[in-house]
Length: 153
Image (cartoon, rainbow, N blue to C red):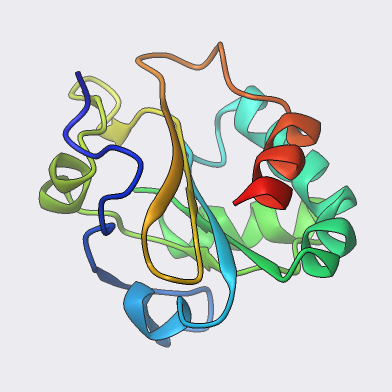
C-alpha cells in the first residue's frame, strides 16, 4: 500500500527548473489544482509521449484551474532537449533526489538511477485527490483520464 493516500498532504520539495530557478512545490499549491507528474527522463519514449499529450491538453487543464508540474532525475541539459522537442510550456523540474522519491513512495530504479512514473492530483487545499504509482514504464493513466480526475478534484 502506498505511503501517500487521498487526503494526505504531499511532501514539500524544492528543485531547479530549466532556468536554474528553484521551484518549491508548496509555494505553488494555493488556489490551484496541481497535476504533479514524475517521469523517468528524456530517454524514455513513453515519457515523451505522455508529456507531449499533456502539452496538447494544457489549455484544458488551465480551464480547470490546474497547473501541470513535471519532475525527473534527469539532467537540465536532457530536459531542455525534451522541452524543446515537445514545446513544453509547464514547469519541468530536474535533479529529483532519492529522498524525495522515497517521500512520495516512488519505485526507484537503481540500474537507471531514476524514479519510475507516478502522478498525483493535488487539490487547492493541498490535499492529494488521486495518486497513481507505477513500477515500470507502462500502465499510466491517460491524459483524458487525468483531465477528468482534475475536473472532479
